[in-house]
Length: 183
Image (cartoon, rainbow, N blue to C red):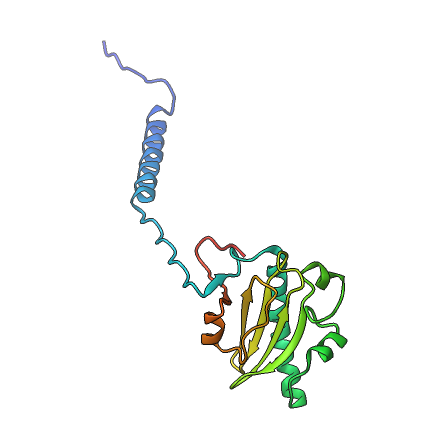
């Protein structure tokens, strides 16, 4: 007599292979994550620089954004008219932060003046409330806008050049971008 063993229908072997493959994938992923190098630590900013993301108050961040946009508008007006507009003309056009409106008062109530520099122009805003937002300088030299901050109700040195501003305690606002920046 001949005996034959018939196995019952099932997927034990296939299940075992699928579980082994999934385990191998998880192990290799864990190994890859564990061996990944940690990101380099951010280099600290120089003493005369301040980060626009982390070093400014909410009011100063708003003023910084307004000044960046105003710098482009002023450059366009300067090219179209052949001269730089005065702070009064910018206020008449309701260009923030030069316009005297409720938002300007809530962000320090700056009094804006105009000054020429060696190769460009500058607008200085002396804060009426330095606890809300410090005094600011917007410099335009044809290559872009530089914005400087001092947390005091103080006018900048004349002319507002890098060395003079740094010596007087002003800080240039810069935007640093790291892997953690999501905006």
